Image 1 (cartoon, helix red, strand yellow):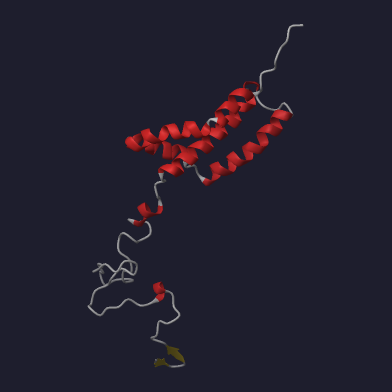
Image 2 (image 1 turned 60 degrees about the vertical axis):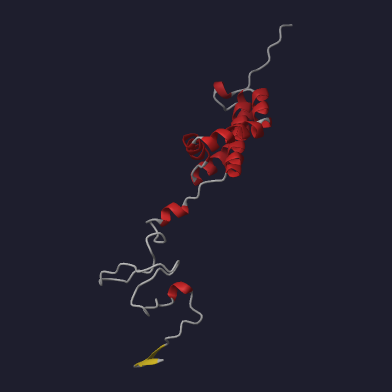
Length: 168
């Protein structure tokens, strides 16, 4: 312990999170606190580096933050997309919407071999199925609002179910 007037500074790092522990300069080199690689470049001005380029937020770590989905996750996302499309189509044509929703699993699975063999197709499907947080909120509310609007005849004419006309 060192004494600075009325303040006592502890040199022990027990109980501190690993990020708060000072870097060891035993060999005179700054090392990454995550992976231990070094030496890290330090110009002598400002704070000394604590992480390598791979682990710095906003640098190489940004690619670590966005994980590409597995084929199973991609298939599940496509299936949910087909079910949502079936719901929307079902407002205009209940039979077609039901067929689309019932076969969503087969339709989604049919894309997987093509996505595995073609990077462009996989990238397109990933973009198609990964929406923003706002998109998920809008979709969830639309699933509730559209049947209510259909019940009260508030949907545009192209979205309404066709009425059966009988000649009697």
